Image 1 (cartoon, rainbow, N blue to C red):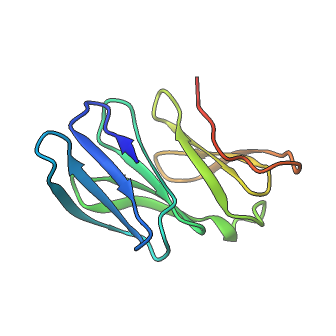
Image 2: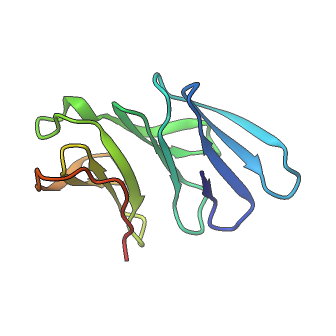
Length: 134
């Protein structure tokens, strides 16, 4: 679950492979057709915008809910430096990058505009469950 930066929407990640948006004031759902092929394990919003990033065990997607489509998606397991699924995602404060951490202990930084991988921090000791960019 994640709030939009303006507090108007709540984003939910669901086991039926969908991402739903809820109007926080009216408690009504807004179906924007944001669908993964596997159960969605996390969704995060970007600051004061309504852009979101969501992930399942194989794919990381950046969405603009206004146009109801993924701006880009990345097949995580096809990345040569990733043998394990990512379990955590977070936006950078400026909205230009997305960090993902995974079961392989690595933290990867992605370009938020096109999903291009920028850098991988390797630590093959522990699972990265959560993080926060400060």
